[in-house]
Image (cartoon, rainbow, N blue to C red; front, side, top):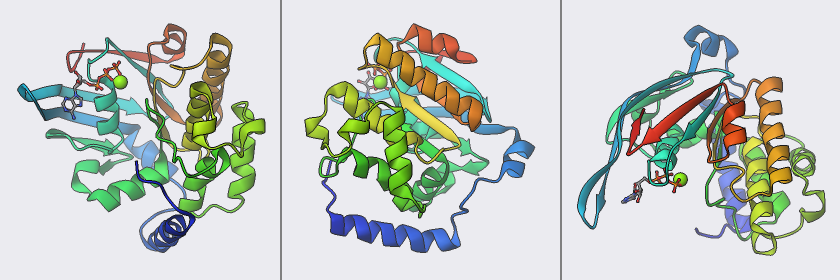
Length: 256
Ligand SMILES: Nc1ncnc2c1ncn2[C@@H]1O[C@H](COP(=O)(O)OP(=O)(O)OP(=O)(O)O)[C@@H](O)[C@H]1O
Ligand SMILES: [Mg+2]
């Protein structure tokens, strides 16, 4: 992952603000969401990749619909295609076939910038491998999406969110100075600091002890209840999956 200097961050910040004035609505449109009912629709999604053994289909013809405010767990064995499906649903990757509608917008019809703007507006994503920016402190990592979206009081919101994940005393640490579980909590804080319409989280409690994992689970479901944040979680944590309204099983690239 490339490091981001203060200067390049400012440049990106400026670019986003310019974009935000024109094409990015500052708030999601609840009426549009209510009219559609679903916040996320996948139609016949497939993903094929090249591998050393030749072409490999890692997601096969997946169709699903997720309603605003729902909580959904995606479970299944290692290699089933869960992370790939999550990346497709969030517009981080493009399908080989099929399409994804996020808040009514066809992700496959948008270019990379358009998808990035839509994600900045309504998506939080917690990667399985965290992907924190190494040159930024915990606090700066959490402030970044707020700054990109042009929020006032980014610092105060980021500090409060870090406090909620139990990291009030680690805000000045760089990712390399944090434990795996602490990095995971910074990644969670970064994903939900903007109160996104949809929060995608890939094994959000995967590196946490039972008590911290339960606390993070509590936070996720508080967001789901308080802000109607739709949760789409990939998890091997049975307690977390059991708390979701719906559990989807995935095996060998297919939803069962
Ligand atoms: N870019 C790629 N090129 C080749 N194969 C890939 C690529 N990305 C993923 N795969 C393969 O696709 C399959 C699904 O990967 P994915 O990461 O989605 O699984 P997963 O269900 O999230 O597994 P885990 O529970 O271990 O995280 C795996 O067998 C993986 O090796
Ligand atoms: Mg995975």
